[in-house]
Length: 176
Length: 176
Length: 176
Image (cartoon, rainbow over all chains, first blue to last red; front, side, top):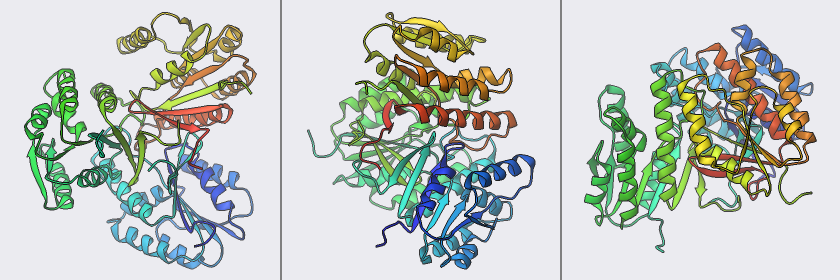
């Protein structure tokens, strides 16, 4: 059992401070820090968000862009330091634009299980609103929830960010 | 005071693992297990969801279908074993399609208060998104929140599922 | 360090019991109670919601209506007793209808920092649903999340209401 958890998941709503929390959890690890970005800058809004995140991280991070083959990116970077994957929601969105995401999610879980160096992953909680009228949004919400549950089952530590505050969900103290 | 709580509510977002959590809480009770289904299979998507839940529960459950008269179903099954009601959100949706839900919610609360055997109920948290543009969705969100608060006031134990993890909200340890 | 926290934020979803929780936290302070309402009654639905909140509070509250200049309202009422601001979400909505909210949010934070008497503020968690299709709703969600994080950073105590139950997020016991 290592001092630090090997697989950490940070979930939360939009603008809840989850990326900042994930960065501080990753920065607690010594050595090289590798940022695995799943975002593709296909419009101005996204380009701006990517820039904001990059500015906050500052120097001291290596960046790997990998919108689809996360399992491969983790395998290639294992042994080089802590990895921060930001985020699984955009990754799933990229996968669903091209077909069935399930084999990719299973490959991600196998890759996470095999990692030697720590990994911090960012995802969203997005099932807490009214049922979407759009059938594609409902399907995304379902697939996303199942993805989150699959990664949570592997994770040593799970946090939820709420308005910038961290709430630890796994392991819990004093609430079971 | 019995060893197990008599009335348990499990809330959570879509695909948060709330039905699985509720089933495991219900399965902790010995004796017969009765599943009270409020869903009506009016389209393929819903038929598929119902099938998924039934497959996961497996055998060992008796199923009662009751889309509207929950108070009656609880009265009829009390004394036969633990009941799992899945879910209050669909029940409210069925009620609102036909008129004012308030008398039914009050009848449910009176029935819960009178139960001898344990009841586990599943509901959704659905007020944590942007205000819906649709007036009916806003009204549903309001009625649903009031329903949840009324059942929470009666419940001995309340859990929230987040990405498959249980967070106990009532009674809380270490957070008050 | 005073016995009671000076700045308290209560967040939560729609119909989660956050206003009732905020009122009970404010009512724990002795002396005059001042309700600072940010709502403007521009339609029947809003008029009805305002009336429901006023009826629940009952007498014993002074009401100040201030849809925009919250910093000014706090400065004018400091020294007169506990203030309950309900809510920051409507305030931000009023500000965004007129221009850039950022200077107003900074002014609010400076005003909160300078208060002698306690302040309880109500806000919403609204980033936990599917990404809104509407660009204005996405921008509101972003600004709102940043506003919440800025106020959380100043607050001595932060609570989240879930289905009528209080979950304390700051300071946390037993979860860090």
